[in-house]
Every structure is written in structure tokens, then in C-alpha cells.
Image (cartoon, rainbow, N blue to C red; front, side, top):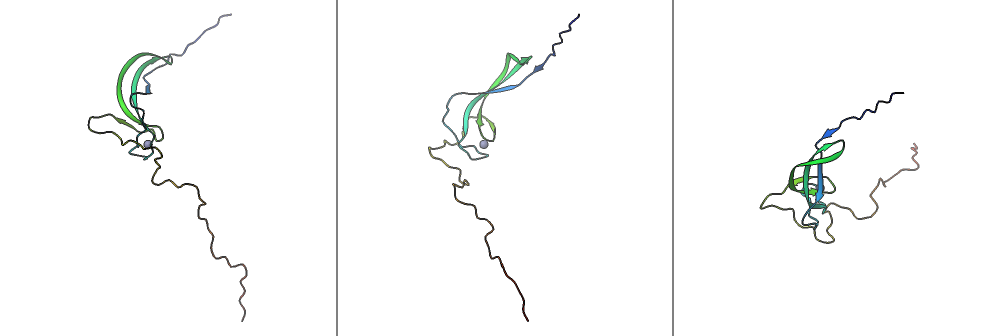
Length: 111
Ligand SMILES: [Zn+2]
């Protein structure tokens, strides 16, 4: 019995992000979370999901929350997130105000 082993050929150029350099958390300019770190973005020539040839790489700032990537440029870097830094708009605990209000339980009009 003939058996045809058909291997689909997959070629792609995915970009892989790797933490690189200074790993102190930075504040993301978009989502304002202290989840930005230095990373190296490298595009690979990939054959059948096996990375073969590194194509090009660049240094970026990468946000772990909103996935924002900013290319590193001289003269600008995201501000360092201090320990205990909290998102300015973050609500910490507490019950949300819900629709408590005046509710007439008994309404009767008499003449
Ligand atoms: Zn972000």
C-alpha cells in the first residue's frame, strides 16, 4: 500500500520578542501601567516553524499589558515605574456604587 507522506511547507517571517538589557519596569505611555521593559525584537526566516535565519533585529520598549512596542531612540525612554506604583485611574477595592435610591414600595392615591 502506497503511503504518501505529504509535508506542508510553511515559510514565515515571525517576529520574536526577547527581554534584553535593563529589566526595570517602565511606565507604558499608552496604558500607563508599569509593565514596560526593554526587549529585542528579531525577525526570523522560519521554515516549517523552525527559525533558521535571523533577519533583522531592533531594540524596542515592550509593554506586557497592552503589547505596545516603541522603538528605542536616543533621547527618550519611558519613565521608571517606582515600587508600589499604581495606575492613577486604578480603583482599589471598595464596593461600586450601585443603584440604591428612593424606591416607593407603596403608592396609593386617595381622593
Ligand atoms: Zn501598555
